[in-house]
Image (cartoon, rainbow, N blue to C red; front, side):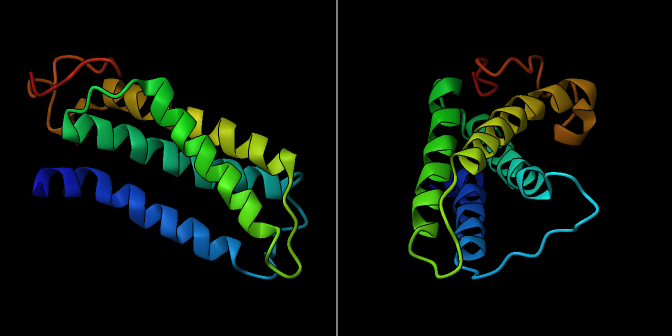
Length: 138
């Protein structure tokens, strides 16, 4: 139980952070950064994707990577729907696309970082495969 909480808890916390950000009436983005809004969505949902990958890895879950990425995208869709009820905010298909891209890049980026920097994740000897379909607890 504790292992699952430690694995998946950060995903729930991050989902709450995203919900609170969506509840803000106005989000200020830097004028000097082209498409700052989309870049922000990709970054925030990139964290979500990485946390989903981490949760799968830490829990030893056999959930298909495509299902976990889809869950992140569905959360992004619910986030956009939530914005329809926040004064001053509107749902956007462009934002949802940025959420989807960010989730996928974050998910697969997590495993790429594990491969490039295995010591940060318990050392190469502890995890002989960084394949997202591999269960490190077998």
